Length: 182
Image (cartoon, rainbow, N blue to C red; front, side, top):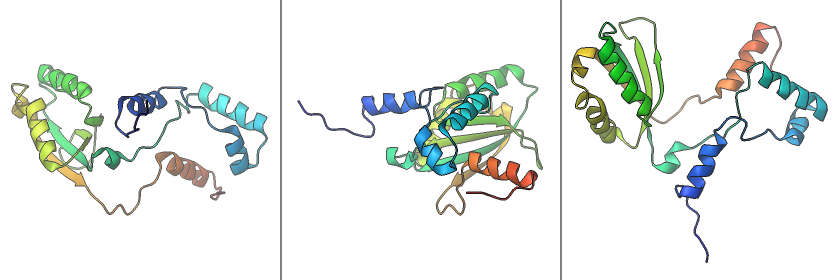
């Protein structure tokens, strides 16, 4: 009995999900040794130290979301009336259950925006349809909570798409007066 593997079959999805669990994937010590030139014991003890200090919280895969048909990333900035505590709690409860939202945070800056969300959707139409159904139609008073919103659709071309980890390492090195050694 042969089975055809697909990106979105249940076996592959469970494996991808498991890769994101803490401590599910260990780094390849030999590969790190080739990249750095350090002894295996130095690498292992450094990884243990970085994990113990809470800097390393896990290792996981990098996905190309477009392979699953999610071609649209949406950045939304909201002006929420945070005095509406009960309504805001309902919104947060729904947002925490919403798999399309993968980042939700308070934000401070110019303008009146105080909440930022990052979503992924298949297209603009599904974004608007699902957000309206999940929030504006489902939560009475949602229009009173969200006084304003600004929506940005992230599209290609990407002029820079860097790893946050690589950027942080470079920033720390520069702050210490050390050049990039890679």
